[in-house]
Length: 455
Image (cartoon, rainbow, N blue to C red; front, side, top):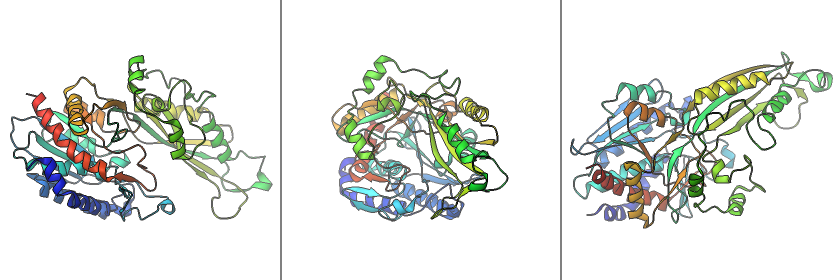
């Protein structure tokens, strides 16, 4: 039986298995979900073995465990390392979900659940693709699976694991489905992801909360001072004002920008979907360019003072913000982190103290479109979709990519089947069932073409 025919015959089971996985609240950022993380790792192990992996091992780390499995059909064949993650983002704010985040619901052909697209649905496509390929006989490549549980908190322990297990992870390419495509009508392949720098800012003023009538206007308000600092991080053209921030940016060529412009984009539809009146961003660049080839600085959270029901007239002692920068090729997350921390200290108004604490980060990554991995992915898309994919730059970050290439010496290819509109990290995350099946259909073609191109 062909892999595609086997998929058609087993669609319902493949869907129900994914729903079971989505019911496990594997939130890596919350300590109360430690047992759920282990349960999810055990479930991934079981599904890999059922799909035909020869061996699967759960490796403990100082944080959450890593699941490693492999199907070695012939040591002389090229080896594909599939990377994904079973951890998910916290579901907050819960009141904005239309259904329980860990009680998957199918509506209008979409699965609604935390992790549906990021990344349980997408890494599970590879597990089912292995099962499908086995029905055709010998799998064309050797396949290794590295499914971690800490991607959503910056993969703090994966680097140690990779460095200590280079022989175990030895491969010819790394295949990742943790990205998106434009649509099923307009397939695309991400040729790069942005890097990340993430910090938390604490601004302290008086030694206690103060009565705003007695002290307001006489003592610097940490919340107001923090707002002033944040407002000064962009100029009137929405350029980032940190000195040296753009020094290392690899500017996209006119040819690259022209290729990106081939991707269909309806600004009116974009604004309507998000419920905004206007787009916003760096002057001189289109919306797609702002989210792909240009660096950004955004406030991810801000709080301080009284935020409960009703009113309480206080001048807060402290105010906080979480700030992240998305980075493009040639920028260093460590260098930008140092710049951002120094700049925030420099622009702090008199009367407050500022402490900046770094969180996780990662480097940007780009895959050459003339490489064998990309060409194999493009051929797979052609076989499955009947048209050539458009190469695009992804706006998100996968912090481990640069380390993978550095330590394992191989290229990465991204084959994402989600959509930018799938509400990743937001309430009501979703994944089109058709996209899920299309991924399972397409992945075997990649292994076939990659094996042929590597001969």
